[in-house]
Amino acid sequence: RSITVELGERSYPIHIGSGLLQGIGERCQEAGFPLRSPLLVVSDSEVAPHFLATVESSLQAQGYTVVSHIIPAGEASKSLAVYEEVITTAIQAGLDRSSAVLALGGGVVGDLAGFVAASYMRGIGFLQIPTTILAHDSSVGGKVAVNHPLAKNMIGAFYQPSMVLYDLDTLRTLPPRQISSGLAEVVKHGLILDRDFAYWCRDHAAELLELNVEALGYALERGCAIKAAVIGNDEREHGQRAILNLGHTIGHAIEAVGGYGVFLHGEAIAIGMAGSALLAAKLGKDKSIYEDTVSMLSALALPVRLPAQYGEDELMAAMMHDKKFKEGKMTFIVPDAIGSVSIVNDVQQSSVREVIAQLKKEES
Ligand code: NAD
Ligand code: ZN
Image (cartoon, rainbow, N blue to C red; front, side, top):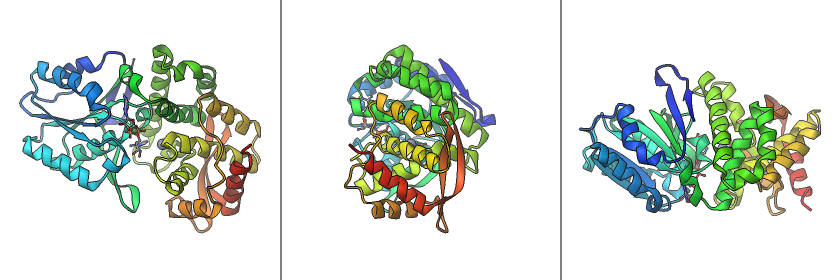
């Protein structure tokens, strides 16, 4: 399966399938990376033991010089300190303007390695090799970043890869919670733009959770295609790209208040998407949107309720730090129906507070 992200001269292909890691050397030639320039593979301590050797030997068999940098697994590695260490490796290995950085891992590796690629010598080649389901989202779209202690993703760039190579075999070693968390972003893509796909995800939830190759290949292709279509129209988030943030305003607040890692990203945005559907009901939309959203998320083993210890005040304060908050009114992505959303700019704080209370009250 292949999709193209249409961005004029920055267009690039996404290849999805089994056994792709073994062909990475050829793909790098296809992408135009010259053999004389060293390649840097960035991976993390969980992913590297499984897949790094395969990637390195494919590249070496093609004739490339390869250097690898393994970061500790986890969000804490998306830091300026780790960024500097990777840059040090790049300089010591003699990477030049024609070199490329290969991101082998989940969203953390992709975001960090992408920012290295965007900034090393003002930008060198970049290839994404996502190994999580969530990374179907993060590897497409060109947002790359590291975190500042005061704010997530605060230091970054828009920088598109030359190619995304999505080898479904790598997903077999993912822990079950990471699978569900990643599927939250998959079903999100259905909820914003593709009604049939959203219901398809619910009806094929068992196959998706078991990583059935046919079902998962289709789901990731649809998810990537929807994301690609949105960013193709609005690469730098001047407008419509914001619909990709469905569930994220509440979700980010949950992550910030609970501490990163208590809820995984997809779990937090699942609760946020349930909240957006409750907000839709408050704004007069059909109540079945909430019921169907909850049935989809629950089928994928995702949470839809907020544990009682999450305080309304704390969550509201966390959202006020969010850039989406202006003069007492908040911007929210609100479903109009399953498969279509609107950007609503004048949501009252009081409505959001009620939604949060409701997300807790529904807990049984
Ligand atoms: P992650 O990269 O931390 O991966 C989750 C965990 O799974 C890690 O411990 C990792 O080591 C492990 N792992 C990865 N692949 C594995 C495999 N195949 N087998 C076994 N273990 C594996 O996190 P993620 O959920 O992939 O991504 C989250 C990050 O992505 C966040 O930093 C978020 O900000 C970012 N993100 C970016 C964008 C974007 O547009 N750039 C979009 C969404 C999320
Ligand atoms: Zn997300």
